[in-house]
Image (tube, rainbow, N blue to C red; front, side, top):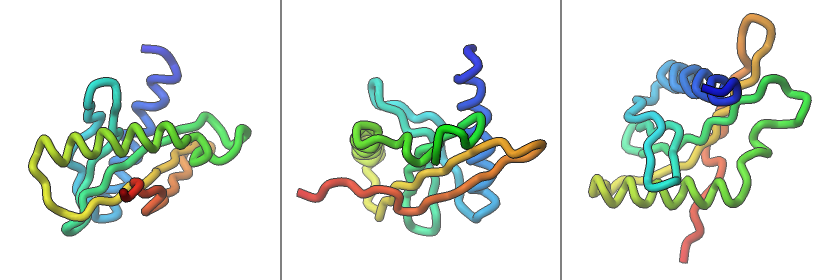
Length: 121
């Protein structure tokens, strides 16, 4: 596996642990709908939470949340819609971003709740 893929997998694992520590139940990692993927699907009380994880080697290139482009948001939203439909879920949903950046022997993890919203038509 390429270095950047290993970094991403480690970031997803750390983000999952962080979310568990914050009281969320992690339901799935790397759920796919076609070519679209949701890094983590979790539940917080009655809210289904779709989480995009962004991991960076360092903070030199700016905030990792900036890497969540409008196209990435659309893809996560479309995959979330497929997940909800496939499992016949009827509960509120939320879209979060978790960023992971190494800091010496540790990591800086930031959790942005309600980081983006689906377009309502």
